[in-house]
Image (cartoon, rainbow, N blue to C red; front, side):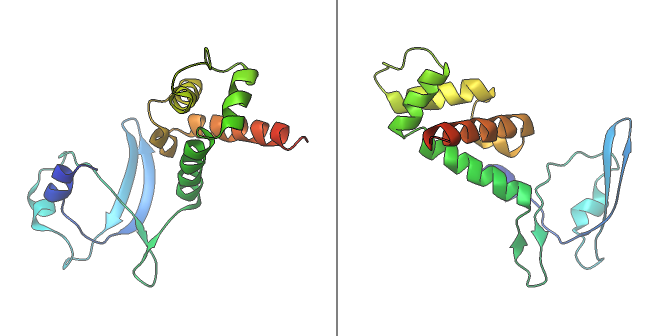
Length: 150
């Protein structure tokens, strides 16, 4: 989220009431306590578009990370580390990924090759692109099994 968006954002606590679906998409109903509801929400017309960032909050008023977020964040970090490992770089080339590994910057070659294989422009896309995430997890498992000799 850019700083400009953060500066313009309104914040409030809400509870999920229900979820349904229509031809336009998912309908998420939230309950906002009257003391928490910003005036801007009341004043904006029905149909006003918002960019939304949400985080679940636990009983101790601390953010709760969902399992899928944790898995994606670990995969993103893992991809970064693997692309700097010489054994993974060689394995990618042997696996048939990418062009010539004799590139001047092998780390950059590995990053570009992995992004191309996953069909993404940035590793962070694995947070929202489940196909890319699953493809990476499979590739990493293949590497681990061949690297461990199993």
